Image 1 (cartoon, rainbow, N blue to C red):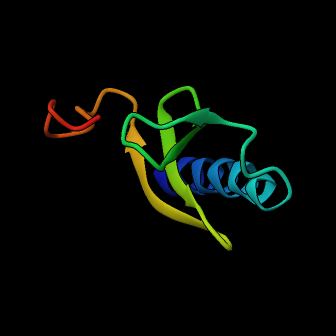
Image 2 (spheres, rainbow, N blue to C red):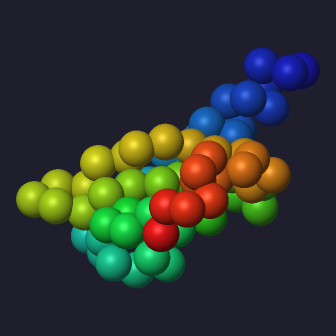
Length: 73
């Protein structure tokens, strides 16, 4: 049952990220300059960077402390 839940979460995140190619600036500006944040699931945030293409930098749980250094902004 855990594997099925993990697959559903993965599919949810992949589906959300698929929209960034057509609409890279649709989601909110990130907490770190030059990044964007997509809420892929109520508990997961996808951090990406838009350039010639959209690069996914990470997937964070919404309760994670981010950025790690509070001085970054």
